[in-house]
Image (cartoon, rainbow, N blue to C red; front, side):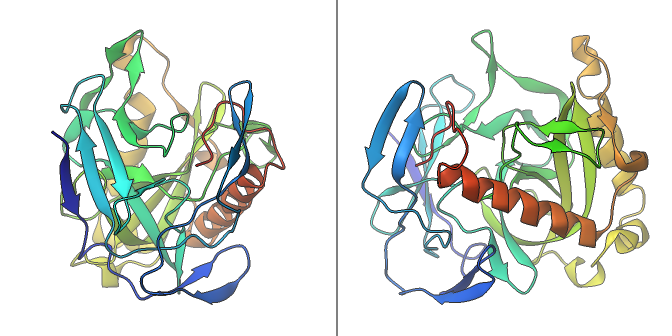
Length: 299
């Protein structure tokens, strides 16, 4: 039987939200169900029609439900997102990126102090969260990750775009990753309001895989940190620990260490916001079919 939980405190927001691309506010009806992004949907070799028109302003329902299907740590385990009426949403496409005033939505895939490698299934309908696999077996990190880890919705690292500032590396074809440094262990599927603080340009087997360092607004120290220097002051050693963790986690599997661009150092909040804006623009091109979606699900 599927288990369902309702996200309330962490996800409750005003019904006025904004579109990061359009740079203007949208007044959303309080009970309007979540729309999405339709048009022609590329799914493998098929071209499918969706009933939902594209819009860069996703409808945000503060009563998002998370429904678990299958048993945790099994091949069929999925975490789906539902709106207030029980209709499935895509956490990648249907939850807006920005809430305005420098606040962003963050979706937890991997709770801190756990090691099951959970991720949004970008090639499955409604992009649920599942455990990653390799050769038919569930994947785990070799040791616990020490921070809440997940994605920024409505972002995409374009694999056809070479970043001239980071060794000409191409994007990794995924949403942008977030490392949330707050003290509370969150749950898979939690939607948190965060503010970005810094970023690391990780290079994983030649692909650019940005890591945005952020903190949840409900963390006791959130008011103390607003940029990379504040992280060093109030969370001493954390940025180095994050970089070392992501550099080394593949080594126990016999793979080389990951590298980092931009001088092997975390960049500041301004640069992190630049990354978020650019990858939001890439996502918009993706859902408008301006670029080939390949196997990615756009609904």
